[in-house]
Amino acid sequence: MEIYTGVIYPLVLIVAAVLAVTGIVTLLYPPAHRVLQWAVSATWGAVGVHLVAVVLLLLSGSSAGLVLTLGYLLASVALLPLLGIGRLGTPEAAAADPDPERPVLSPAQIARVDAASAAIVAIALAVLAWRVLIILETAA
Image (tube, rainbow, N blue to C red; front, side, top):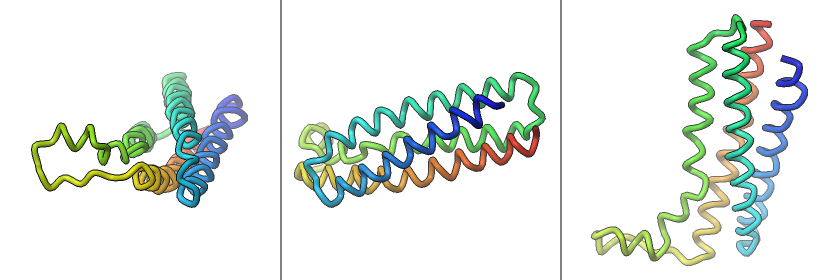
């Protein structure tokens, strides 16, 4: 539990903060989209490490509520596909869809869509990680 509270949980919070800040910066300055893409990759990794750490804690005999804890973990994983949602507006994605009314976004619009979703997902991930921490600490 000490590794989780001392390393894993702070890592998730730091990555969420970096994701939120890069999302806001990209909203204001769309050419920062490349940096946001790196932050998105780091977020996927941090959520994966968080997931594995919590599952190992649960399997090691923690008396935490299994259903609620796993529900929060699944919610954090379910948020990840929202990162990079701007890709649905690329010309390639529009060409693959037979709907002639499907919009095609400019690169700046794609960057802003990704930035807004990154800021929202970052806040949600931080809240979900906090809830998992509360559940695990209560059970300890």
